[in-house]
Each structure stands twice: as C-alpha cells, then as structure tokens.
Image 1 (cartoon, rainbow, N blue to C red):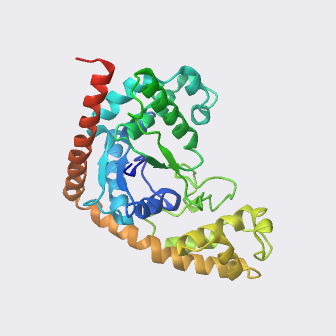
Image 2: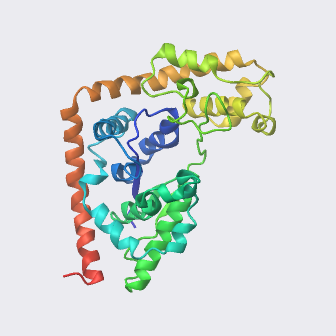
Image 3: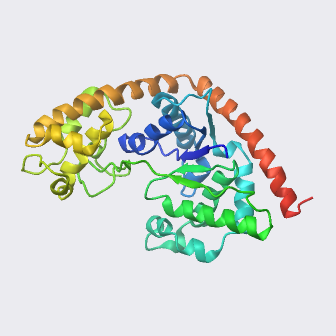
Length: 332
C-alpha cells in the first residue's frame, strides 16, 4: 500500500520552537519518504472564538512556516482545511458512526473545557471526529502524532474500522498508523521545565518564537531557568532536573544528535557554557526560518497561490473518495 501521510497545524499564531521541533521539523523529513498532505486546520481553530482578521493572518503565517521550514510545496499538498468542503461533510458522516462513549473518554476535551464544560462549544467536544475525517478523507496510512494526539488517532482507527464493518466494505478506509519519532521532542517552557512551551503563557521569555531575532534569542536563553548544580553525567540524574533536561534536549534536537551524545559533550560544565552553545545553534537554525517567514508574509499573493494550488490538488483526492463514500452510504 502506498504510504500517505496526513498532518495538520492549527493557525493559532506566534509559532514557536515547540511547534518547529514537535511538528515542522518532522514534516520536512517525512516529505522524502511518503506522499505528504499538510493542512492548516482552520476548522479546528474555531472550536474557540477567533477574531476573523487574526485568523486570516494566522492561516498565512502557518503556511509561511511550512515553506520556511523546508517543506516543498511543489512535491507536497499544502492547503487550508476549510477550502475543501469534504472535511466538513465527512466529519458529519463520521459523527454518525462515532459513539458518545468514545468521545466521553477523550481527555483533551476535559483539559480544554475545564471545570465549566457546559459553556464549551459542541465543536470542541466533537473535534476528534473532524480529526478522523481529516485523515480518512485522503485515506492516509500514517499520521505523525505526539503524546497529546495519540488518543485521537486511536479514535480515528476505531471509526475507520466501524465504518468498514457497518457498511461491509472491508479495507475501504485504511487503519491509520501512528508515526512516532524515535525522539519525541516535547519542548518545555524556559521559565518552568514542567510545563509545555506555549504561546498562551504570559511571559514571552518562556518561549523562543520563530520570529525572534538573534539578540532576543540570546537574552531568553540567558534568562532561562536553571538549577545551581553543574550539568550531570548521566541521563537518570538529568531526568530529575527538569530545566536542565529541557535545555539539553533542545540542544540535542537542534544539532541533530542523540541526547546521550549531547550530555557527554556538556557533562560537568556549568550552565553558562550550555546556554552560550544553545544560543549559537538556535540563532543559526531558527533565525533563517523567521526571516524567510517574514519575507513570505510580505507577499500574500504568493502564499495565496500556494494555498490555491494545494486546495486544487486536495480537492481532486477528496472528491474522488467522497463520491465513493456517498455511494457506500446510499446517498442519491
């Protein structure tokens, strides 16, 4: 079976190092080994209210980040989700296949909705069904996932199997397999090594934004929280020290080496040495991406053209599959 990869990024704006190491870097690698469909998932974004002007700008920014990171738009499909109506249509069909009990087990809804879940949107609750539609619409065989999305992919697999069984169409939907990188890069806050790096954190010094200039990157790394000891010489001890682990993990990911090798290089040294080296490699890697994103954002017509071409390619695939799905269900 042909390997087809689908993945999406929400257009939430202010993309940061966590987005790059956790997703974009992996997307670039995957384009060399599979047919890749990369989507700006704007339908997912509106499960919570978005200012229309900001959302539009964020869609362009996320597209720019795809290109600036090294994704080739001539070889891959890059588009925004809402431009292909098949996502919404299949989402409704699959919502009629999915079960309430399955959705009730989704922990991410509980986390995002918080204590007052009665005020959360219905969209936020059925969000995993839309994610299943995103994947199955293109009969994707593989999906890159982190720990926070693994449960949703398992739901997509359950929905695919139930659809195939209910309509007696064995193997119509492939059962999508997770693509879990060997080193899952979970990038944590520079201010608190126990919290995930996030744009929602109040302090801008908690994260490295893809748009940060060299001076700002250096300042943020210098101010990053550390402990009083030197860098340890073994992984077991490093894992007990969250801030040290985070900085060394970021360093190893950026330079493309195993954590153990990075630890051997840094063990016994003080944090100022690690921070200087980390600042240096971050500036070298992140600043060119930020500059290219800025240049692309100044040429919206070029980004619109990339999205338009991607939408045309995605629509051809989506319509072919939706037509078969309508026939299977019995629509006239």
